Amino acid sequence: MRLAIIGAGKMGCWFAKLFRDEGHSVVLASRNHEKLVKVGRRLNVETSSFLGAIKGADRILICVSIDAFEEVVKIISSVIQKKQIVMDICSIKEYPVDILHKYLPDNLILGTHPVFGPGSTGLKNKTFILTPTNQAEKKFALEFKKWLENRLVRVFILAPEKHDTLMSVVLGLPHFIGLVACDVLLELEEYPETKNVAGTTFRMLFTLAEVAALEEPELFNSLQLNLPDTLNIETQFVNKANEWLGLIKKKDSNAIINKMNKIKFKLKEISDNIEHSYKVMYKMLESSEN
Ligand SMILES: NC(=O)c1ccc[n+]([C@@H]2O[C@H](COP(=O)([O-])OP(=O)(O)OC[C@H]3O[C@@H](n4cnc5c(N)ncnc54)[C@H](OP(=O)(O)O)[C@@H]3O)[C@@H](O)[C@H]2O)c1
Image (cartoon, rainbow, N blue to C red; front, side, top):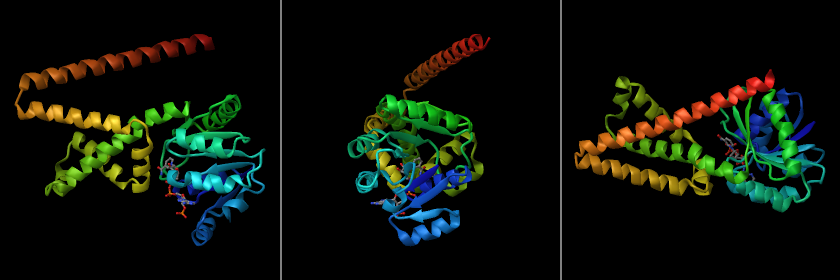
């Protein structure tokens, strides 16, 4: 199979290497010729312009930034043929899937989101989300799911809108909390010293803070502005923070302890329900295997 990877950034290179190692014919494309030649040499894969890479490819994987997505799809749509399958890896899904349908109405397309970064080694134990929107896309998604699962990937099939709602919580909220925490920590003179005396809780906090701060600013910006529920959830976070701060300012011990006990109770109830659902699911699986 011949694969055209459109976009030779961090993730484009990651996928070029993956498919090269899987034994496929890979052609990597980018707008920046000079950079592309170097990357191609480093990865030992063929390189080309966007339009050159499309010619003769069976599948096209679009790996450009979310902000450039429509511009790039518009350019390549002029040479894409009906039989070519087009996939993308954007971290949001409703918008790119709409764009692919708009410019490539006659092609089989599939929105995907690898929920891992370019620092990952291999596919094993990673999470992938596929977002088909019609029967043909669902059929292809199931084939790709099987291919991924054979490589021990956890695969979820979701509607693009559902994906984006979940990612508002899974990516948007931790990036936001981490970045705000980092902003606070860096203002503290004591920050460098705090690491020496850190316990588990603080280690978790500064790991979140530092990971969020090391994220690419463009990706952080795109996720915060494009995920549908980030504004609501983060506003709720700020309101809740103010609510807690109010109780602490008032030194209202009863209210603080009651509120915390309520949270513990709610958390336990949810965890128990999840555990119960897993038990039921495993029982069903066991009885279907016997
Ligand atoms: N990084 C992650 O953790 C991660 C995880 C999952 C999915 N994703 C998704 O993967 C995609 C790429 O992310 P990345 O981390 O690989 O970003 P990246 O390293 O910044 O690469 C972005 C790529 O897009 C190209 N590009 C940007 N603007 C362009 C334009 N106007 N015209 C043509 N090409 C343009 C860049 O070309 P130049 O090199 O010439 O600038 C580069 O090849 C994004 O959609 C992101 O949501 C990222």
